[in-house]
Image (cartoon, rainbow, N blue to C red; front, side):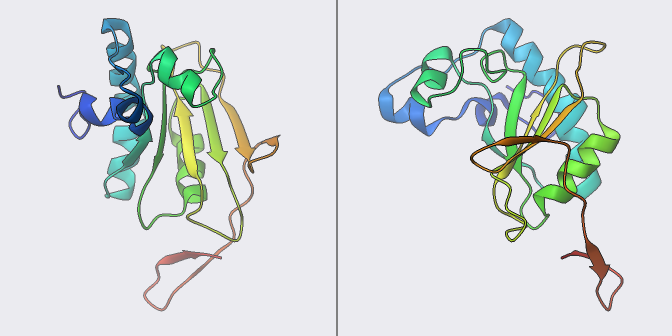
Length: 165
């Protein structure tokens, strides 16, 4: 099932945990609608901006899958409202800053961020129906959460392309 121009339900429900443990990871109609909203409001604009495929690490998670991961029962992944992703060749901090400045979102977390590893970790983004998004921005280093995003330091290469330090 196609959720939006570039995203399919299949990639948003794929789970190695579910496969390994024989768990069904199938969303209901409400969760599918939430995944569509997430695609249209965050993933499609992000893909268009960076002109590269968005790699989905985790989208919808059934309650059982979520518990196997050790995640909270209140996780927005259970509702189909959250996605963890990366874009190969683009620093996660750059993508996170762009989403913060250009998309409506409920929560944006730069997860397992290490300033020495520009492509380390991933981006967690969530979306609720319009009008109820908190616009919460966090960084998680694997131990603690901090409010806001670190500043980006960048220069330009010989061709004028932006290079993040």
